[in-house]
Image (cartoon, rainbow, N blue to C red; front, side, top):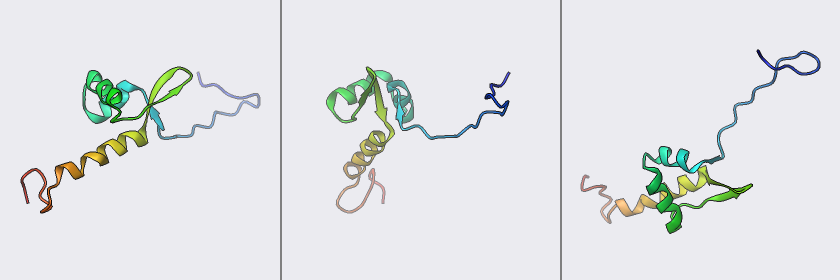
Length: 84
């Protein structure tokens, strides 16, 4: 049964993209295990925030981490992974 307000109107549903993820969700996003995700957090490679005592990973931190990996995979000739 749908919840309605005092005027018996259906609720307004707004699809908002996630701003923060749980550590498990962040690990799934990167396609790595939970333990590896915690290791990245502990090393400082991925930043987290505390919200009411809950550790969350900002989506922006995941994007920053992946972007930081990009230069390491490209050599001076612009070859990625040994391919041209």
